[in-house]
Image (tube, rainbow, N blue to C red; front, top):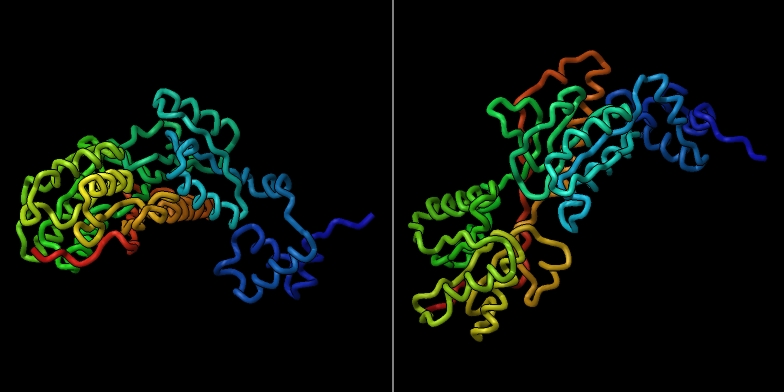
Amino acid sequence: MNRKATALDVAKRAGVSRSAVSLVLNGRGDGNVAKESQDRIRLAAQELNYSPNAIALSLRNQRSRVIGIVSDEVVVSPFDGNIIGGADDVARSRGFVTVVMDTERDAARDASAIETLLDRQVDGLMYVTVGLKPLDVPHGMLRVPSVLANCYASSSKPQLHHVIPDEITGGREATEHLLQFGHRDIALLAGAEDSPAAPLRVEGYRDAYAAAGLSVRADRITMAGWDIDAGFHGAMKLLDGVSPAERPTAIMCANDRLAIGVALAAARLGLNIPTDLSVMGYDDEARIADTMVPALTTMALPLREIGRAAMTTLLDTIEGVSAGTDDAAETSVETMVPCRLVIRESTGPAPTR
């Protein structure tokens, strides 16, 4: 029977010390072990099929190396689950595993979910939401290093680091893209009034107009909601029975589902996208934006990047605590992750009229 490889075997194959192997495979190689040596250690571990003993590691470090993640409905969402995917990528790369609990939008379950994870001796906690929103932070999250992803504390004195998308810049860059095509009459279907993200995207839209020296028409901004039918009805109000000289040359939407509705309305009215009307989305929702006909130009929400940034912040805090640094005392910290413009076929030069 073949003997199971040890850390010493990995060290010999990689030509490094036993302590270097421990540092790299326990996620503490950066700053302690040269990049070339780290690569050799990982390759040697892979060739020898070696992995650290998680139980022994936990006993030595007084850590479980488990991160608890609570979500409002991300686990059952086909979209925002990318946040958890990004977080898990970082956790695994640094020798941690994640355990996820979904409250299915029942805020009354938040506290019990947190307590359940704390009972399992997690090293840290993350709360993830579908859509940007304020959160009544469960008190248990203040007992261990914790971070918020795609949400922020609703209290006036937040105590946790939060990682959110830069919605204002996203709204501005989406509008700037249309302005660069010569559009001056751009309507905005801006989402739902109760969404924290919607007014931020409107602010970005207004900023782009102001920077271009243009005035915004109040009747061109509609809080339409988020769904396909809202996009359809919103577009019909803007386009149906309106002369080419009076209708907007572009419609910017607060999400991709609204943009689908706009495209359906344009088809109903015999308008060609983008020759007669440019359509701009927001989110870059998988299997929607890139499969529309024509394919949708949109602002991609950086969901996976939010997850990665939040988990990196959390694990840095956890390791700072163990090293006796003051990182855990950091409060009221915000990280904003930029959105990304994805140019496809639904936007083009403004029609002459």
